[in-house]
Image 1: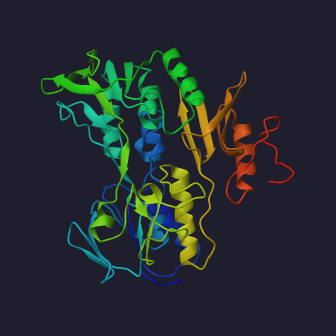
Image 2: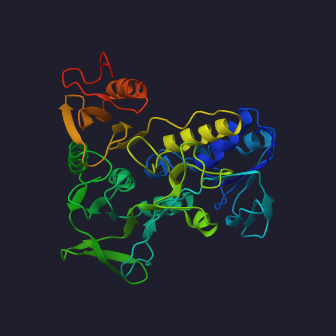
Image 3: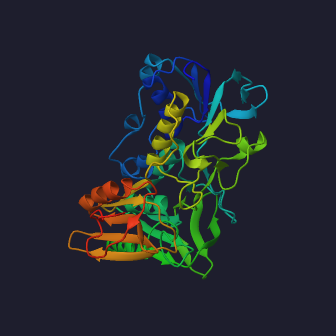
Length: 400
């Protein structure tokens, strides 16, 4: 198929990339990208990093200028979210009542921030951080905030704490026994905890907010342990959930994401799902990944599949974060129960994640060379796993 109508629901990294990649691969049919936010498709990672720290402005955030989409004959319809999908008629309807026909539909609906179910969550100064509008508000409030409380010790919460600590007293409140409990090894989490505390960030583990107090705006956070934390800004980093409501409403199977096959097709082979909203099969079971690299890889794959490629999706998962000047990079796919073999050095830390006797992921702090070697090694295996050798863990074995 090279000339059918493609409608992309979602104008984030994945949605914009699939449209551009389709044109780059010679697709001649109409392409429409429909987004809920009014902005041009933009980069999300800087929202909690450079943009929040003040080292990047809004004009640096768009993925491409408007004229780039015009040149590619990609129609952008922003600020008008799709509200329903009719699989039988092959149409979508937007909030404004616009009906768009499609031959292939790509769901790139992303994820939405989880809400905070405690009294006081609606006070002024209590902010999520998911969209550009959220980031604009948080950045503006940071200009005058003296006491910032971050609810959640995941990647976004810790990036906010890193950015905010330069000008405010910051407390991170994490309900779990350690930071990043589902995402990284205990060894890398401990390294990051030490870096935050060294920079003056107060990190409270095993505690959670039960009430936010204030008049018209937040003044303090009351925790389950009874502590009262002063706060004139509370950033809610309680995680996200996949935006699957649209898919579920039109009858597509969902379970922690829109369920797709090895070619990223839903139960309807004319409908794909990519990025944060998609749950796809891997040799280690189904996963739903929240990263820019995953969004880009899956978008490029779908563009290739729609223009004649036949191989299944098998991109190697990758992720990175920067906190207090330390660059953390992850390659591969680890589960919480996997073993961790840590190799600390003066430069940083490398942790090898091992399932059984096979290396399945590598986490690095300040070790780009190890990250690059791990990408090469794991990427060489069809199932992204190789026999683990403690003596030379990043060298290819004689027989994998």
